[in-house]
Structures are given as structure tokens and as C-alpha cells.
Amino acid sequence: MSSRAISPTRTTGEPGERILRYTLSERVHHWFAALTYIYCLITGLAFWSPYMFWLAALVGGGPTARFWHPWFGLAFAVSVFWMYKMWYGDMATTDADRRWHKAIKHYIENDDQNLPPEGRFNYGQKIFFWLMFYGVILLLISGLGLWFVEDIPWSLRWLRYLSVTIHVTAALATIAGFIIHVYMGTAMVRGGFTSIIRGEVSTAWARTHHRLWYEQVTKGKSTQK
Amino acid sequence: MSQAPTEIVRISGHAGSVPGAGVDREFRVCKLVDTTTCIGCKACEVACLEWNGYPFSETTFNNSYQTMPETAWNYWNLIKFNEHEREDGSMMLLMRKDQCMHCADPGCLEACPADAAIVQYANGIVDFQEANCIGCGYCMTGCPFNIPKFSPDARKVFKCTLCNDRVSVGLEPACIKACPTGCLHFGTKPEMKELAETRAKQLRENYGIEKAGVYDPAGVGGTGVIYVLHDVTNPEAYGGLPKDPHVPWIVRFWKGPAKWIGNLAMLGGIIGVTLHYFRYGPKEVHPVKDGNGGQP
Image (cartoon, rainbow over all chains, first blue to last red; front, side):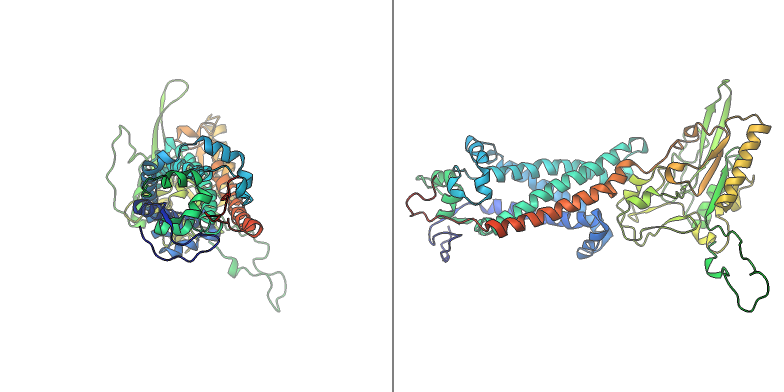
């Protein structure tokens, strides 16, 4: 594990002691998903509203955006399914989650002293995971209808209408999750952003935000989860 | 057809009335298809291909005279044949020239996300500007008549232009020019509507075709192509002409309220997390060595 010097701050904790939170593979998958999602977000918003059509110019113009959007969407779906394979064991709702959920008001108000301890992922992170997982399934299926609209026979045109409805609804739901996820990962929970890049968190960070996981990985076991 | 720039309103030093004043200049053009005098010769199909420069596609034989099942990206004008059984059991061949209807309320234009890829002119022609088309196919979802068709090679969508290039220089569309029976007419919308109504009345009163009438569907605000049908109560028999076409309500909702609900929700989310940060700020990490370490 790297032992680079990190200056102590109130948000990242003590220097020195570090715990590996995300393996290299997990980080790579996260960022592959993030970049493909952001591409789909930019191009999707361009198709969504004339006031955001200019976004298509950022990635080469409308026809180029239309060509690549489904391919990046496919890549995003594959990466989410990979994350599912990697993380679904960690994403089941536990009793700790249920207790934490009841006290979520304290979490929102940063009154973390009164929060029940959580495992490797808290209930909010799990909700985000399942939102993206089910969201991408809907986006993928409806996206095929939009991708190959000319192959949907006229007699089954209700499939065209259904595809548009599902794609838009699922996309908006994932955008809601995305806004909260980015906000929490960068501004609200300091240390989270560096952990998904370099993989490490301080022991204090782990103990504060994911105490059950902290206790598990520090109890004589390897920190290389 | 548009003559507005040369229309005289006042002239100087002129005794008497202004020449041309009070003339009703109608810009809206219209194609009238009288299915009762169509003989299914397909001259209109050939003329369309010739004028627009497309090769004659391979035909699909399906035990009928019809060239192919539906219009294609490079085959904009197709006569739909239907062997229709009359109430008395006798057979009649219904033939209807299918092409873009040039709706006053075009679903393709409503659904299109690309800036200026679909244009509706004052003369009623709804034209695709392929240079601006991104090939998303939303127009194919918005159209109630199954007209826009995607070209996999060009990755753009094409359809009948009502010969906008000919009409804009005072010529009639190529299909009209080629029709040998005179079942196709071209003129202003009111003229064509009147001619169509006259013909339908003639069919009803002189030929005993009681259900004869004019197809100019109000659901899409009227169309730039109108039909005289033997049985206006059953347009579906004419190769699937919809009885009450309208822009699909899902497309209307998607392009209307859904857009604003979605935009406000996204904006609200961004404002919401910003306000949360202003109010609560970042979470603090509790040092490991401090006694209870944040344990409740």
C-alpha cells in the first residue's frame, strides 16, 4: 500500500494510517462507467432540449453525437453489469442499513454523531447502485428501440412510443441520482473523491463513515479487501 | 408560390384603385388525389424517382400490383393497392397514392430535436433539411402516417418534398405532371378543397356512391395532400390511411410538459445540493484517538 505523505485535515483525517477502500479494478470500472455515462448525459441532453442542443457541438456535432450515443450507452451498460458482478454481494440491504435509514435525517444534517454505524457501503450508496443498475436495464432495452427505430414495424409503433417514454423517464431518474452522487462524492464527503481515484482512505475516515467495515478490515485481517 | 414580396399595397401618383388590391392571394398549396379516377399506372412513382434522381428499386412481389410494402427513403411515392370486398360481396380495387401528407400540424417537426432539420414553409410544404438532420429517427415516432424513412448509408431521414424545388419556381410537382388520368390536381388549398368537394358531391349524387367524401384530417390541422375517397368512413381500406390521425399524445407530452418537468427537476436538483452545501457544508471526520470517536 502506498504511504505517501498526506497532510492532516479535519475532513481527510490523520496522516499515515491508510486503508485500501477501492481496488485498482474497482476504480477503473468506476471511471469507465463515469466517463461513458457523462458522454451519454451530454449527448442525451442535446437530444432532449433545443436549449441544450449546443452540447452536441462539444462532441463533434449532432450526427456524430447520434452515432456514438448508443455505443457509449452500451459500454456504460456493460460496465454497470460488471460492477453488479463485482459489488452485488456488498449491496444487499442489511439490518445496519435499516437502522441507518431510520436515522437518515441525521446523515442529511451532518449530525453523524447520532448515526448508527454502517458497513462498506451505506444505505444511500446502495440505493444509488440499484437505481443505476435498474436504470441502465431500462435505458438499454428502450435504447435499442430508439437506436433501431426504423426496424420497428409500423404495426408495432406503440413500441416506439414506449421506448421514448421509458428512456426519458429512466434517464431523468439516473440524472437525479448522478447529481446527488457527484455532490456527495466531491463536496459533501471529503476524501471520497480521492478514494475512488487512488483507492485509499484514512483510518479516521473509514471509522467515521463506515465503522462496521472499518472494524472488519482492521480486526487482524488484511486491509486488501 | 409565395408572392408576398411582389404584392402591391400602395402606389404613388395613381388615379383609381391599386391594381391587384383585394386579390385573395392564398399561399398554401395542395395536392388533390382523386382515388376514384386512379388507374394504378404508377406513372407518378416513376416521375417521382426521375425528378428526384433515385434509381428504380427492386420490387417486392406480394400477390398484388403494389411495388413494395411501404414507401422507402429513396421511394417517396407509392400507390397502395387493396382488393376490397364491397358489402354485396363483389370486389373492387382500391388504389391510393401514398406520400407525405404535409400536415399543417406536423408530428415529425414536433418530435425533431435538431435545429432546423425540418422546416414548414408558409405554402404548407414540410421539408427535411438533410444537412441539419442528425439521423435520430424521432420524426419516425412523431409521424402518424409512417412516412419518414431512414437511410442506413446516409444515416439521415428522407421523405417526399412535395417537389419543393419545382413548386418554388412555379411548377407543379412531378407526380402531378405525369398523371395520365387527371386524378392528380395541384393548386391552392381552398381551390383543391372546393374541387374535391365538388367531385365527392358528383360521386354521391350522380353515381350513387353515397359514402364518397374528402379526406383532409382535422386531427393534424388539415393536410397539404387531400384525397377523394369512395368511402370516406373507411379510409383504412385504402392501404391503412388512418381514420383520425393526430400527433401521438406521448410525443406531445414528451416534447411539452415532460420537458419542462424534467428541466425543472434537474435544475431543482442542482440548486438543492448547492443549498445543502451552504447550509450544512462538508461532513467532518472524527479523529480516531478522540475517546468515543463519534460513537453514539
